Image (cartoon, rainbow, N blue to C red; front, side):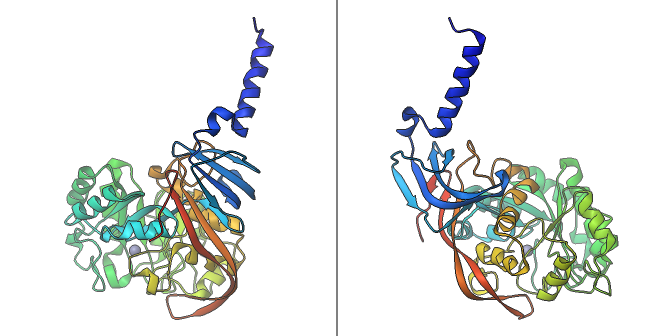
Length: 395
Ligand SMILES: [Zn+2]
């Protein structure tokens, strides 16, 4: 009979064997991603590793996995990261969007306010039919995004009861509310629209994402209406009423908002959302993004967005490390919405969502939203995507 000490050491031995993949397990391995530079900030890993996948989950991350698998991806010379999570997109506009984003390594997306109460049913259907996890923020304006004219010039369109009804009907895919607060969208209605979004979200305990930039109201008044877990997207929007004061100093209320749990998101977009100057001035004061996002749509290939890895690459120019950049697109983003609780990581046991990218050296031109150009020395290029353990076919 085993005494207690023997039992404990036997259990420890089998745990160690599990990490090395015992033979019984090796037979069921479906995919091995071989020899890539695995960058997984969720577990502080940046090293050459093999990744074994079985049953749609990561079963081992080890220096050398000598098992046979149904499929192997040769990732030598490539960056292997957790699947990318893009928390500000318009991927819900049509069912062609999500599979396109998946090609770029995006294994989770949030549609940020494309639709309001009047048109949320269509966007919800896109989210439910998406190959990867797709979630929605309900626009506080019942019309959803109206571009270029703006959806909040008439405050009566921000109807709390209708917004609550939209959330209740689509509780499986709705993860929060969205308010576009810039002057061209809301004018002097910005603060009232945000108050109504908070009112709609409160009974469901959901976060609110606000789009800022050239707001009618000062940033400090806007931030005072945000709670822990709310998100400020387009954080580097230029004046008036951005996150820097008239002298270019970061407003103390902005740092205070971060300390109490407000998330600051990049939100690349196309028009009016960032200048290189704002990025540089703010980052020099140590205020870096919590998350990156693209504000992606199917048109993004031909705008300054291009794809999510391109947006990530912009921050290599400003001194963020590769690991920090991957964190902003994976584990940090996963923490914003509970829908991504077990994503944004390559830890053993997690669903196997993987973005494999090439980190290319050269001269790369990046653009801001005001035709400003900067040249970077490195750029991440999508190479392959794995979703729930399966390699995604190239388009
Ligand atoms: Zn947007």
